[in-house]
Length: 312
Image 1 (cartoon, one colour):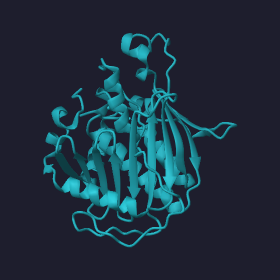
Image 2 (tube, rainbow, N blue to C red; image 1 turned 45 degrees about the horizontal axis):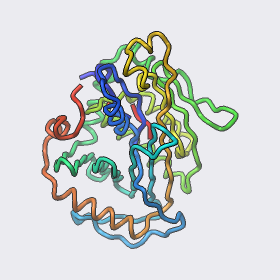
Image 3 (spheres, rainbow, N blue to C red; image 1 turned 90 degrees about the vertical axis):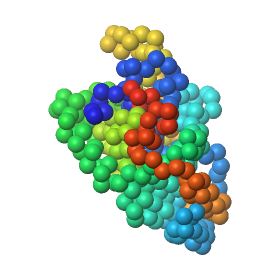
Image 4 (cartoon, helix red, strand yellow; image 1 turned 180 degrees about the horizontal axis):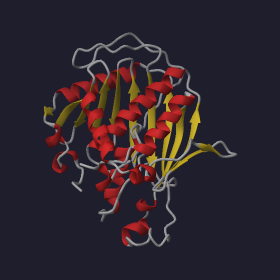
């Protein structure tokens, strides 16, 4: 399967191919898969200190070190209106847990187990995918790409900074404008970039089949500069209302695309409420039926159209 033949979605915000899209609601669903890290509408004081070492619902101990932190993300199609999606991503020493509050889904990257687990509470399903297998499958897809496709979906140079401090990465198909902050600890930037890479890989290999290259360039910039994003704007002409009503509008260059915006808030430590949430998520995931990846990502289960790259 070549992800460049399918529509794409956006802990990520990845560009989204919408050649077969007929509904703006569908575009919103695709965008959510690309941000990679989105928030829950709760916050805590940044000065909160980590506590003990509680256990997860499956009995696994949580390593509540000083490096544990949380990122909340809101995604907007219209900045004058409430966010269309919120997620909360918790970074622990050996795993990352992302809760999609809008869609009631979990994404767990377990570095000790070398796996990604996805869980859909509404569909009562979950599945586990090995990290090595996921990486290999993306490499196979990458090898199938022509040089023209690679050039089309990658920036020819590093991110460019404007006078107001905004950074831009641009390819022929889409562009990212983003702002960054220096994290409390440099390791936080590495942890975020690593998780964002795995989220991008997942959504390139599986629905919504998002183009990963430009977003992974953004992740590499964050890793190299030891920074975290505070805002990411993905601009893709194919996501505009005009495109949905007039498929020829992009070719005629009549579209002024409106960016999809992700705003991220970093919480430098976890408090007791965070650990309670983690236990709740793990207990909920433990009640779900384990299925194969093919069954999990079937449209009736995962809510993804057959025919979704990444903003967060």
